[in-house]
Length: 239
Image (cartoon, rainbow, N blue to C red; front, top):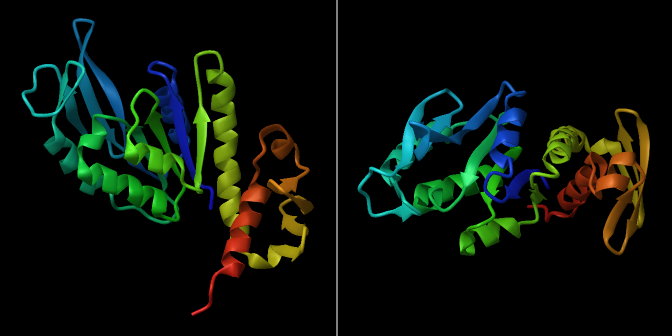
């Protein structure tokens, strides 16, 4: 199911700020964010804060470790100690990570956490570095269940509103798919019972098309997400 959102953009584009604003609206959430640490107005490092408010230093110019990004030394042990505290979650928790970047990717435990979040049944929203790429980041960007949203300073406000709505659409799709009797599919046409009546979808070369306003504007909607997942479920081999 397309339920994992990756927010990407250049440094200072606002991706972390947007993620923090979005997750603040959800009571049930698990994950961590990364904040700058400044002394006398100068940035000297980065600090992790978990959903419970626990903080630990990820990187600092005064650390002496074997891992370095720019002028910041990364303490992988500090990060690894946080991982178990954000690895336990319930099915209805929103999962979040800020960010999937070069500093965090020094940790194999962090990479495993990323997979754990993305492979879960939970909705996951994370920020992804645009200035760093490797085999790991390329692999997660190419997943079928990932939606990539790129932002910049000019589009930040518009994308923030889009992401807020998109997240609600994904959560709605999860609820729709929990009731398979909502769906009636006949070759290239499908009827789906929604909260507001019956929605008709048609199948084209590029996939299912919906006539709802959100799909017409964004090429994605809760109805298409749910219908694609429904077809996966009914086509799975029975044991």
